[in-house]
Image 1 (tube, rainbow, N blue to C red):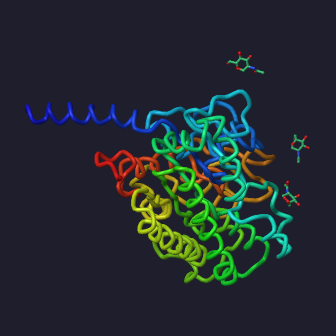
Image 2: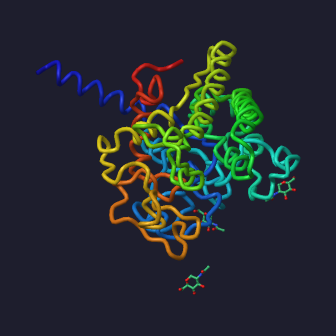
Image 3: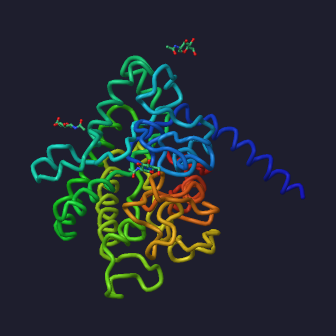
Length: 360
Ligand SMILES: *[C@@H]1O[C@H](CO)[C@@H](O)[C@H](O)[C@H]1NC(C)=O
Ligand SMILES: *[C@@H]1O[C@H](CO)[C@@H](O)[C@H](O)[C@H]1NC(C)=O
Ligand SMILES: *[C@@H]1O[C@H](CO)[C@@H](O)[C@H](O)[C@H]1NC(C)=O
């Protein structure tokens, strides 16, 4: 009994120290974490939590929102917001942002599908430019960033979309894109370390073969193309898997090069793949592969490019918490909440973001 009381006293003590541990949160990435830099959607986007479309590609909060809540900081303002304080953090993520620069796609005649310039390096450029207004001199900013958490990514999803939807074979995307993309992410991480970041979370890419968009556009009559238990498209998950393996290799290199810096991999892949394997364990009664907001009853996955979420002909499922996929490409708030729990408390960030042991 007394031990139990002591235990609760200790945990509440540590909870307090967590909320004070980070002075700010900085995020970089694409539509998985954009909190309003690109606002092109309308309701039902935002319906579950905000009651309006905020630019988040979901019915509610994103993983980064739950991370902010978990460490006791406000939801991140987008870096394009006017007249907003960035002293507790800011978000550089842009919907549709690729990791690689425009030129890479232009040279390959693939740039038509790119409508934002917000590559890894451009996002870090914007951060570098903004820093003096947040924390002053480079030395002051080093002190400031030594108490901040940086979430870098994910990056890569839009690059793979651009290559694959542009008609390149997956094998070519694998050999040409993946090494360059994971290299670009590593360069971004290294620039942030140079500016003073000491605590970074670097997310993996998702198992895109489990998403209605890919499952619908690249459906196959050969059962061997699908995981027997997950129902996900193998070829595309193998591409994501390869990206994550090269990304991990890059991050491990930094563990030796910067022993005073904590760089933690955040595993989106394993959690989302487990949604596909065991949907009921998480309350996803509709299975993991059917879209909530989109073309109800059309095809196997409720997805159709002519009736996308918030456009004519689309409708919303009665209960988004029973779905992983919100619009066929992005996830529901319910899925984001579970993913964030796995990063804050483990096992999908290790040591977890809210671990008792300081990783330094
Ligand atoms: C900016 O914010 C300040 C303080 O909240 C407010 O007094 C001011 O009117 C705002 N300016 C604009 C242009 O919105
Ligand atoms: C992105 O940058 C390239 C080259 O700097 C430019 O040609 C292109 O129009 C830009 N795209 C957008 C959407 O601004
Ligand atoms: C969508 O539906 C509305 C109302 O039925 C119609 O006025 C509009 O033209 C439609 N838009 C498109 C893009 O089909």
